[in-house]
Image (cartoon, rainbow, N blue to C red):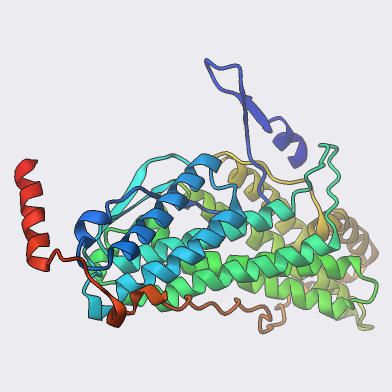
Length: 420
């Protein structure tokens, strides 16, 4: 039913235009992509750093601006390479010995609506924005891997095992970028500067995206386990429970954040959808293990798990639809992997087992309580990430500054103000 509802919303026509507006498909959720806007580096840094270094900084940043705007962020490999090169140059702006941290106003905007969201004079904010962009591009790359290019719209989703494993590695990398943002960059930014940040740069939001990337990696692993004949029921239950833990943690991170912004409410619905889906999976596999017991209480507890899983699955379908319809509108992929298997199995097993053990449910009414799920330590961890070393161009001992002195630089600035 959900697929039929979503199918009718897969494309719309924009009023006044003949061109069909394509509604993107979401497997891996990318909350927002923010790209740099041209900023004036030349005036504030003139004569304070070598001309060659300044030109390289400005040129590389402008290159990123042009490629991001020209391709709508789709040139992922080229952009990631340029961003990594730019980091090694811009990292020098944060060094206290140069005194340049708050000289340049760095401008960034949201790629989706094109509005300039932020203009902040802080070099750590620039680093934060660059690493955040790298994380969002990496999430986009994982999403692309899980959407076959030759998909015919038949409702059958086939993703190769190699693509799934590559996607897990990419998700761990994205999680590492975001963890680095939270633990290694935000700590350098004063509270008064943070107040100027766009809402998607809140500590809790960044941490939630990092954790949900681990959750989506675990979901792929669960799918691989379902497809493997060697994976035991205990392994599948553990992965389902770990999946639930990740999305529970992600929701907790968002609970203290202001989510009243473009992607905020959609982000919350995505977490709720995946939380309900993973909880249904956890109870289903827990029920299968309990049902292997020989005593009546085991079968009663198992049926309670199956019925709970069925109810949670229905709620997850509603949450999925609400997520897709929340602005900006997206469409969900056809069922695939672990969730395709579970959507087929949960209702079937719940119906069969409740009929099989109906007499026990009547006799053992006092035992009709939902058992606790086992607690596991999540196994996936973000990849370690460190900023590249500061480019050798920042070796001040080798600098040959232009003849223009700092005093002349200040005079130039005053002249510019008078001219304006």
